[in-house]
Length: 339
Image (cartoon, rainbow, N blue to C red; front, side, top):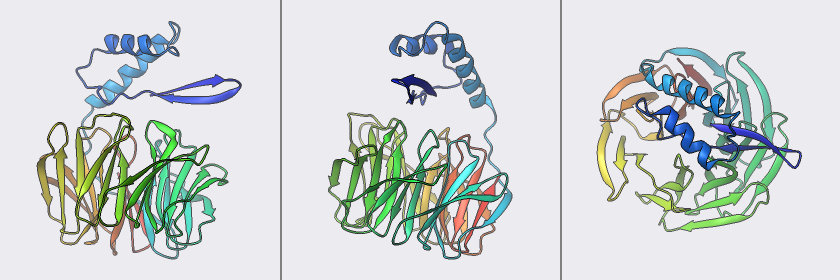
């Protein structure tokens, strides 16, 4: 949940993690614990908090949607799409492309809302922050940029990588922090407001092609062409599960509490897997592949659905924040919405 407040005449947002919320959680005790540790939860706000927590818990009790069908197709860029992502509301999504732009689309209206221009090479990574008011892009021009998601104004450019940036995303709990991954074999953490580089993560022996924060914002997972995935502890955080995907056509699920242990292998794609992500509740896994399909998996490694319809390789995919809608982006220059 996000708490909105005003400090020194400036609107600010503080995010409280509820990743441990389950259908069995005692809402009254949870609300009391949050109020005890958070000064913004005053006695007058507490009833609103309890009501919100009950709504979120009821949402968890709803049946998980496991079947998706094509809802809309967007003809997006002239040149191939490289990546796609929803904002947290699910009302918009962003695409990156070889045409050096990032474009923002309205899901329901089916129209383009904005074009972000400024990169000098391929835009390969796109990601919204949690409040949905900023977008980070990563480019083959070796820079990352943060933009105002409404106006399209460029807010800051981040330098430091020696080769192409192929992944960039906001910290899920701190939108003043972004992570980037590069073909130079490093991943870096930057502060958005100051542009300061706070971490340079060195350890892979080849290009890093993926970087993802865990749900608590304390760990960073990187995947590399050296055949390994690494978990970096940024602030003494604790992770639980991670999913990896490979050019060997398989995806794997790992438990990283204590000793790292493989819990499932997902086999079915006939060509390399280019993207993998969890559904928001963490009970489904979505993969995109060069075999022109996306697949939905359960945590035991069973494929529950194959999403077919693209005529080219699928570069990217993702769930919306609720988990009832999927977006896929393909080399056929289209994006598809599945519901």
